[in-house]
Image (tube, rainbow over all chains, first blue to last red; front, top):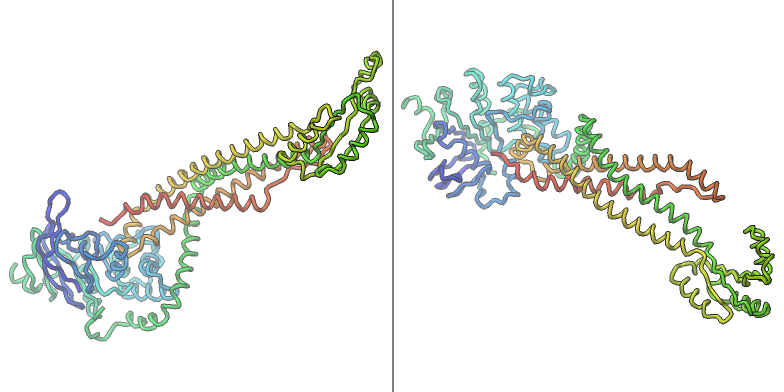
Length: 228
Length: 331
């Protein structure tokens, strides 16, 4: 699903955020990406969604070579990727329903289809009764769940999350992780960047560890507890 | 995409098969629905800030009303003067020593000329009587030994002949006649007036071009501010997979609405002015014994006013969108 081939990312000014990173995440796999802040987690996610392009090496998403993907095709790549942000990135002048419906409207779905899918996605994250509320009236955990509903409403084959539990207490964080595992169970590939070791050490998934822009470990989350 | 063998899915995934089956028909339909939705929602967005929307629309309206109003007024003057041009006539002053018989023969000959609608003969005596009556110099005339006035043939050209170049040729031919002392076109000043009107029309056009540029800038700047105000929204929708066309759409429709509203305001302004002017104009033309009425905005002018407003609104927003939207990318 995601393949990195000796990928480096150097920013103008010379700072190298990633150097020589290679890994392969299979379709249907769930993996965590961890490392200290500045280790290159965000840069790696940005390369996958083509928010930035790699300086060297090649990135493949769903079999597509991203370095050859023209700018005008980027939107179609992004429709295959559901992205969950730490800051939720919701539109505060629209209702929960309209926020979740946005990816479907962008993709040009029919009105009746939009309604059905949005309700299904909201049902999934347990917010079906809040569809007419505005995001500002929701709690942090609820806002994050709206963000997740929006990321999955289009049924993308790949789900990316950047610190999705960053601002949430442990109980809410576990709940959110549970949601990601549920999506993974129905075949969605999931990659979650997080520094919350406590949380991921309780789960059994693949774990990629970045340090100083290099991939220093590629193992299981269960090994984390042992090594810590 | 290749997915692994699916485990039993939760019910949320179940409608997918049905959805895929009906997608092709639904999509084009959805495309138009979406356009309609953006059209209405961009109007709604403007409606939420009625004051600033009205200000922008007013600026556009005034800028459109100026050249449009000027154009309509000049058209009116031209229409009025074209009525005068039809009544143009040529006075042929006959040499004093030409006998009346020859003059009448000449008149007959001229009646057969192409472009001559009517020839009227005014003898020297008639001319004197007319002059005596109209000028009030009767006593002075009595003291003259002899009638100082020449005989006159008054020629009315056909309407086709009234066109300036043809009229010039006719005058030239008339002046070469032996018996004719002088051939004078009475309506020279109408042509000069027409010339002035043409200059005025060109001026209105240039003014229009200038103000059109101003409208482009006003709309462009307004849209630019809207783009910056909604920067975050643009970034988010780009991250979700919106194409540039999708993001552009609401801004273009906003420009469309500004243009349309501006044109409607301009139309109302021009019509209002014409109504205000029509009373005094009617009174004035009554004093001149004329049937002239101020002509309003006809359908063609109204439509082109609307169309140019909309075009300018769209073009202005296109400029702003093309310039500023590309620069906003997720970071």
